[in-house]
Length: 201
Image (cartoon, rainbow, N blue to C red):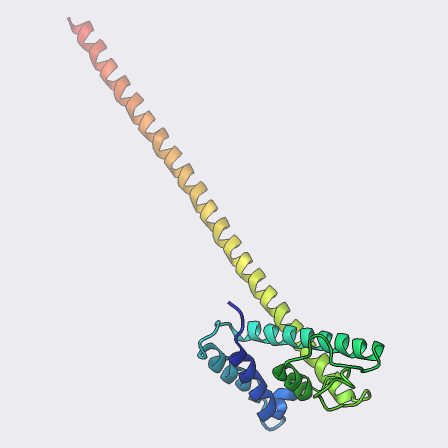
């Protein structure tokens, strides 16, 4: 199920209203603020009637969305430069995409209709994008690590089950050996009794 326009708007509203969320920075006076904002946004997104995802998945959705929109913006800009800015591009960005670029401070959209020019030397926006990419990559690594731990735990459980099964098999073998021994002993006793009876006759 695809992310709905309303869910994209909820994300933009959080970007617009929360500067620390927009810059992906932890505030010194509120170290859990960024995490809390994502938790709050996640609840709003999952309760909006569209697809439901965990926080890590939502972060990937919006990171991918920003990458796609920025790529389209660059293509539109290059197309306009090639045509000398004559006429509108074949497929312009939507209003919601333009708002995303404006809020995230895209550095490569100069000249695109409807988007204020941010400036090519905006290092703060570059750093924010880098930090955001690092945060997403960190979450991916943590998720992979959790899966490895789960896999190791499952392997340990299976090994323990196999060990117990081997012990059970050995125990059953000993029980069978004991039963055979008892049967042989009983047979020998009966045979000895029959022999004694024959000798008395």
